[in-house]
Amino acid sequence: MMQEIFNRRSIRKFKDQAVEPEKIDKLLRAAMQAPSAANQQPWEFIVIQDKERLHEVSQTSPYAKPAAGSAVTFVLLANEKELKVPTGWEEDMSAAAQNILLEAVHLGLGGVWFGVATSDAVSDQVRRLFELPEHIRPFALISVGYPDGQKNEFIDRYKEEKVHYEKW
Image (cartoon, rainbow, N blue to C red; front, side, top):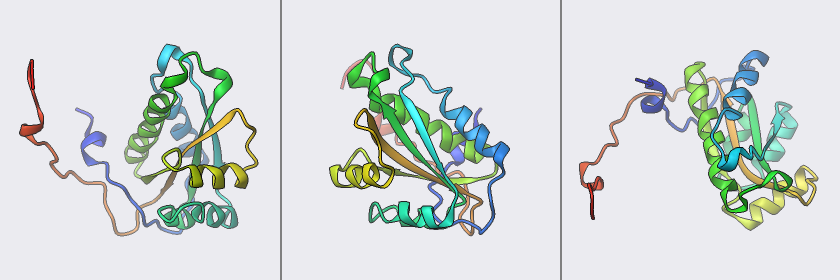
């Protein structure tokens, strides 16, 4: 059983401790192992570690404030030129995001996902901040670091009443 699935929590407070380059590499490799529609793999990533840049990223949305205290924040982007299934990009990017979050738990790190594609205003902020070309769609921010106070620990969320067999 993959305990990372059950233990993963949104970690928003991080120690002032860098994440090792080999762990950043593993997080990116995990993201790129995600399934994608017609194997289009539309993902592109910007890796932010500079404290000033992390602060700028944290200002892109009212919810992204914890990015400022992260060791690293990944900006997840979709390249429209790679889309064979144009309506599948958000599913592809979601799978990549989840893989990063699960690998973070596996590596003893914590992470939190901040939506970007869910808001035109936030998408525009990210687009401007990173001077993105038109064919690159902002999707999400994922901030990662060593947890400070919070823990990745199991909380049972299973609700039998949400499971339906054969019909509603």
